[in-house]
Length: 269
Image 1: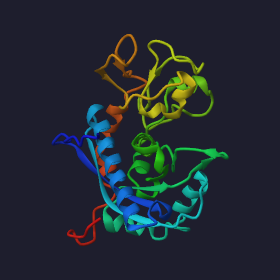
Image 2: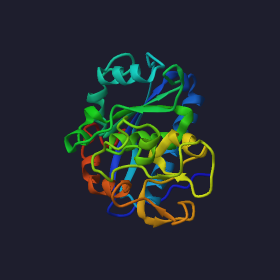
Image 3: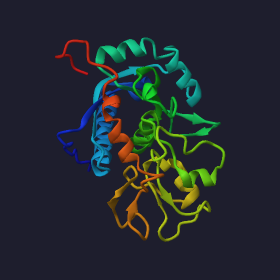
């Protein structure tokens, strides 16, 4: 059971608009079920922010069902950027509904010929980029849920995978982020075998399979958090290379200031 936690009073609210494959809403009953799951995903996302000591709170501003024209991650991102094939008027509607982020929810998502979970438009590395609606969209496989949503939003907010992933896959830019410490954090080796003390957080993402064959911990890196799941030292981050919570808190206003709702305030999302 997902518990909806209350955000701190100083938290900034980010508005999320979902464009959902019509294959996930073929009937009124299925649409209701899909909407219910999306609300649970947002509840879980907010629990990640709260447990990471991040001063952000997400809310759904609209859910729209649409015939998405592709199942390939890079093609969907391109269609979103060009407002075509199911994403017509994307940026105008973001302004109308006050959507700081637009997320396409696909019923099937193919990445390099295999089923995948998600792709963000980019790892936004400047204040201008993280402040722009035109660089604030991603595609997520509906079945992958809140963890993938949090991970892809992290990229849009300037976070990257981190140094251990960089050692597993050198030269791929896994530490190129909005600040040197705006990264995921993990401890372990790249052998894919579970060993005592190995862990990774949300931003390490699917690379945890290569590190320990295991799952990510449900929070963003924060060295001020002590948790027995975070290795022998119980520190869930590093001040110089893995403090995503600090980066998110430093930029929280920019994430929440993309768009202001311009349609009737009484309208139902």
